[in-house]
Image 1 (cartoon, rainbow, N blue to C red):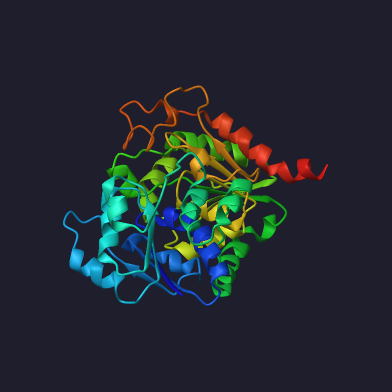
Image 2: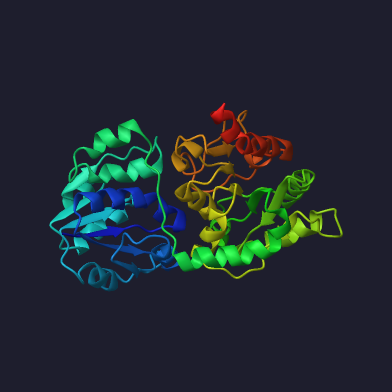
Length: 360
């Protein structure tokens, strides 16, 4: 059996799709499953071995090359086509495929014209479960599975990259092996900022949080980041009040690392602190404890119901969550981003104490 998934979006969207692909793979053990995604997300192949092949297509172009997309979709003869997009365009893409079974989310008249099975879109649930509903026509018991629990994605790391993470981290923290390793990743993608999708926390707040965590010598704070985060991290550095680097603070944000190396570093953590971003989904897929800052987005859609994964957000604002629910970009006065560092600090301490509490 051969199946093709078309899943535009960032690396977070790819991670959220993994439980669906895994369920399909479990049902059809000898299946060959391919993915077409955006170039920025093709690195999902570094985090999962579920796909036989990952192909790139730039869905962001103003003028999409329909013939190129059609050729990609027909390189193999597929029995199943799964389209994760919930739009008229996504359903029309199905017309380019010669798959026997075409499954996607219902959106207007094109759903009936181009899909063999159109699934009612239920966005009031964890996105992993929402994607998995596409499997119901193929694997009917999926419906009962997702009603019982939130599906949690899993990623698989190469042993070599895990060894790299140890060799990178251990020499730096060798005198602090006993301390809790708190990783902080403050960044969001530049693409989301350009699209006015604002989910970031102010650098001054990150600086205050880092200094509060460093007061406890039982904590080791490790700063992570990527190319998209250089400006944010530079601002954080300016806001930090210390001149000499504390012995329990390490900045790894200057390392030019791939997505699998980032995941390998996160896998060594006791806790990750981040915003609603790709590192958040990586931590979930690794089963690492997490404190995630949410502004206008809805944590119920993006985090599973699991005590290891804690969302922090402004509870008193009636206007949130709004992003993707009632608007496509952030508002001009995003008050939801103004959470005090003490709130995040207290959430971190609760998460660090989580194992101790559950063992009592």
